[in-house]
Image: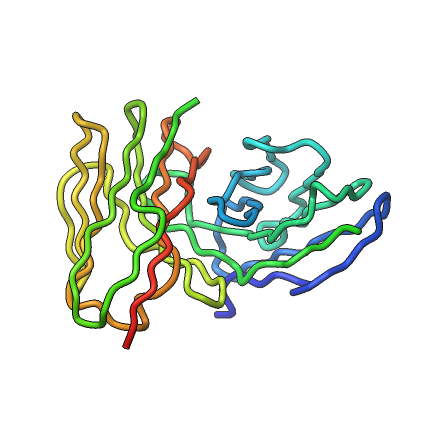
Length: 114
Length: 109
């Protein structure tokens, strides 16, 4: 199993550009989520999904869109990048959405918006 | 919303020393997890511990839910323990998880 994979590892954008961060898992996990991590801070939940076709907002959803057309993939779209979106983005997955299910994290995407 | 505070913010240890990291939370929670983020950024789940005590090798954790705090104990620290330790909670029974700001640990050889 590859676990949770994220692409790209690094990305530089100009203000106003759009892009999609990719996240995939091969563990047949129903639950997937996106977090951002800013310097000196913990992770903040952006969006999450409890299964294909079902998504919901987390703590900081503004400026981001998600969709979940398959169990394996959960892409995060930045509609019009802003410098405030400079951050490290982590994708996570787990088998279910029970509090006992362990979350597995991807390696992260480091995004810089100029 | 719920507040999660971790202390100390930074900790430097000599290899072999023991340490205790603390997580305080402002309201009752359904779930509490401890994570380790290594110096390369990888996040690993250490414990799911909404209450009680668990041990895994040199690491153990205790959560006293009625008093709204959790402790992570690291014994006989090693350089590979360096990184950031995060406490994360949620109240909803799902995964609207709130992370603390973390404790940054550096273990010197």
